[in-house]
Length: 142
Image 1 (cartoon, rainbow, N blue to C red):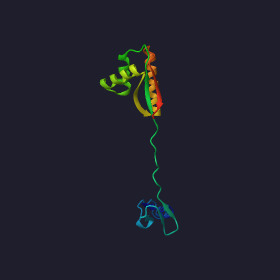
Image 2: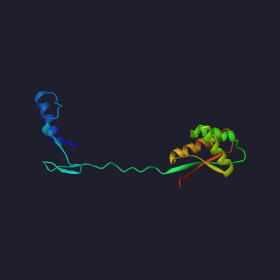
Image 3: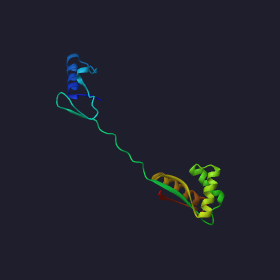
Image 4: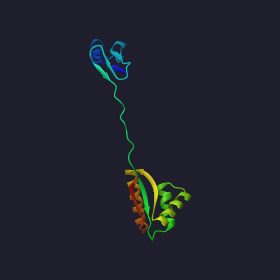
């Protein structure tokens, strides 16, 4: 890890400008201190260089997008929804549609919350615009 001692470096830049009228942007080796230890290092003038740990990121919680059965929405329309908005192929879409039909609900996909909410809203709006009461909702993944 390389650390540039800014006050010394800036001082040299100012001196260079005052002497020659232009700034010498080359950093000289004596203005840099190289830290070899990965945690904490004491430098010659008492400064401490600390290497910060990368942040620990957690995966967002996942939500299940669920289609609910109704007596009015045609099976072909449900398959179209699954192919268009959830990128399922014909066989996968048919399987999910049959699950919705026989079990009352089926899983269209698993996504982070914002994506799941967006997909559910898009499907609900599209269904209403086509005159069907198909309901799509999200549930936390178990």
